[in-house]
Image 1: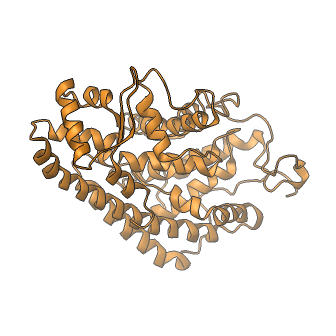
Image 2 (image 1 turned 30 degrees about the vertical axis):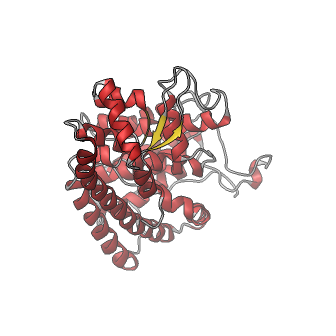
Image 3 (image 1 turned 180 degrees about the vertical axis):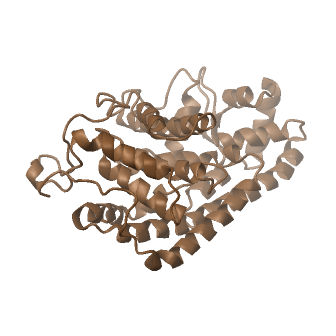
Length: 374
């Protein structure tokens, strides 16, 4: 790499539309099928909550975090307890906080988009949340970088860098062009999304967190462009499985001007992740519908729907939080949990001790969420 990358001006003139026509058709059809499932869900925010958290886990893992989905959920279940299962200054907790911030940023994006058009000002707000209290908190959260950084193994000099992002003085112009293109009508919105995501990561506008924000843009822009009815799409599983190709395709844009290779890679990711998300969403919906009958029969309670909704939004939960989140009187809530455990719906993963309530796992839901073959 001889010097800082100079971003191409959007819209691109080098797109080989004929090359991409088949994948464009497949990706649009797969996303339409997935959105049909979302539209058929009464409360997708609740039912797909574990998938949203898993996306945060996997996107953060690409950047080096090690926490698992179950660890994140268990940590959140512990927040109401006096004692935590891990020390607050451990690397595991720091990783978990990064994941929780990622999910909070996504939630903020949805709230902001309800009241104003999506644009780079919102991206800056998401970046502030993403770095709040975690790695990178001293790297100007929400502010454009004012230094020349570069990507390379630790200790490597800049003249041997893998990638040198644009100089700070041209970042604002590049982002203005990026935002203008966001609002333009392209021949195909999914190709436009591919370009917007890559261009953002190549501009590298922040000192830290650019990759996570770039991946967050995928569901946000799908929602912004009204391709999906909910900003719920999970691209990071594919990108993590194909991390080396992911980075090589991005690098090939700056090194060789190979936008078409990136577009093909990204469209393939959309196809496969739409299909995987559809399978998982259907499986979760089937589980939910089955639980409505099963839980009502087991508990013989007027609170069966509240019970189910809490379990799907918090598949790892302690008994005291179960009562609080569901609004079920404490004694009744304890009786319901006992019956669910006896029937095998819940599994105790940590016994109560002192003031700490026992913690339970809704295993069927986590199995669907974590299973790559679902």
